[in-house]
Image (cartoon, rainbow, N blue to C red; front, top):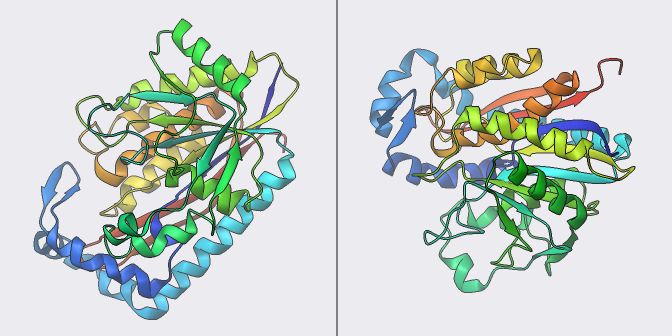
Length: 334
């Protein structure tokens, strides 16, 4: 039977593949948009007022931005080393879609890829021209020059689908990504953690963003428990890494929440992931749900979580930005 040898949790946002100067290109959208934060929706000015006592201006000075960029780069290098050292044969990557796979016509709650490959095709100039500032600049961090093709471990993907169906999870079966561009949740892992030489993988897709069929946190935890059973019952001698891609709190950072959630995952306290309620897990913060299946699988295995770094990367005094988390789980005996 297959063996799970490693778990990883990593953020994947555009601020990890752009420069601190380019981070500020997102500020006009931050100012214009309304943002979910602590269960309500806030204007930019309301957030600035509410967070005045946090002195976030100190966090957006050029030296602070550069220091945060350096910390994130070092943490990602560490995760890449941990993944290489684990000698995994296959990676199961849990991520989400932001209309890179699906469209409004069809958004499954769960999906699993089980073909033999996925493409990461370059975007057209027309597509690039329609991307918001700060997002357009991030694309080289997700799509290599000339594009790429990534191998899929279809046999494991099929086994996960069959196990999910047997255990009461109705999942979409994807032979490949239909739009030919690998979603950034997965492309980031292939490019940054696997250093453009990815092992075969199985992308698992959660609908964290879009109403009305977002799986609740409790369902994501149960899905992770099923995922562990599926991998361990796969008739193979393969060594498997399970990777969560996304999060932590954004587009408005909540350090208190992040630290509670990280502490809960480290201790295996899965109930604490559910406690904040579904209203908290909206917008970018919904990507914490990508971590829940991995945390649940690792808790079931008795693996120990190691925090590589937690870096709240602010870009405005309103607290907008992306809180970056980097962790891995290993056997308790090291």
